[in-house]
Image (tube, rainbow over the protein chains, first blue to last red):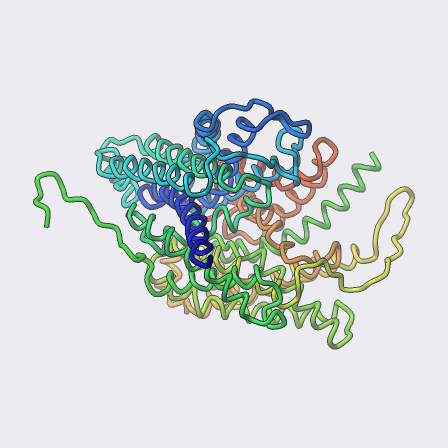
Length: 311
Length: 286
């Protein structure tokens, strides 16, 4: 009995790790490789989740629904809807300096959240959209397989991108923008491409998330869950390193889940609110990582130059 | 027309609160070259410090204000010394992430210490003054007067004291300031102290005007950054103008669009500024 309970929890846990790993890979495309400081992850996450929720649910009176489309079409829709939004955002922000970009992206994420909160004809407002089903009538175990396939697929794609000449240009932009421009590369265009690809990966994560939890509301896309945890994962794992992003997702989600137990042990009088205590712990953890090991668990490994032998 | 004037009064009130926050944010931005994402939550914790002083010592809120400002200034300097100072030397952009983490830590501390429900400084309803068709609360005049006083104080600090001049010099041209022997670390500490104190004042005024809530500061962060950018980075006077413009624009926008989209108005102004005039109204150190 206890073992089955533990296994069920492990499956639940790994599903979420996989979904967050996809978000972290998307962020790695933007921040780790290109140096774009996007703290509006929650926005693209929400767009992906809501799109598939609207496309795949049955008829509903309170929100736009009734399309009843299959799972994969929903996910494809997530990416297709995110594409023009990310393109527009990227177009506006591509030339901005890092700190301006950070402010701009957090604003966009907040506006997207406000939009889903207020336009209840589309999203049912605060009450959210329930009844988003897993594909093929699968349970958590089967869904884990699907998530794993998507994580693997995303990982392979971003790894190919990282090793390609395109990825080299992105890192060149990150390390020295002027030199890259002087070498004849269209910096703004490459940035825009990386931003859009990263955002679409995040939308994919959002779509998978919606089908996993089955119910979404604007509350799930507050900056903490949508943005902050992903940043902690990437920084802890090692930004610039895709394996680091995966490892970071696992380790940080492990820590995040164990803070729940820790908060359960602590007397309520001392910590006030359980969720606040958990956020406090994870915030302190990030500060410690930033001060003591800013390169992360798996620091970025630079691919060998053309013609250079592997070490 | 009456409605417009009423909204303008609200806008100026909101604007002076935003201005106090934006002065601190713009000085930190100017001297340390990073957007301080915990500024809104610094405001909130300042407001809660005042709440504790009010409830423990049973003082009127205006007497609790200086205590809260001092405490928040100390907290801001402390955060900088313990965390930001170490990161500053390694990789400046990491400061952004770190301040984002600080924001969450402060907010969760507020929830842990003071709880997450709405609170007010003084219970009971304050009788508003009815001037013709306009409505004005005594608190509004108080907030406006105190905010003006603080801005005048900052003005004299920046123009008359050595430390204030050094701060402006570092904001204008970091390298030039450093070769003339300005004590960078002391200037940075003073910047945090002033920024923290003004943030606390803004938080207290916001709490007087509405209510105290753990996310009260976070929701104002975007308008504050908008005011900072509109006014020009590192320009305290620009931040005042920016704050008033953003505040009025946010209130007046409710004539056309739903009030829940107010933050979007501030954001739109900010994006237009970044595209059309990235240096801000008063040419800033962009």
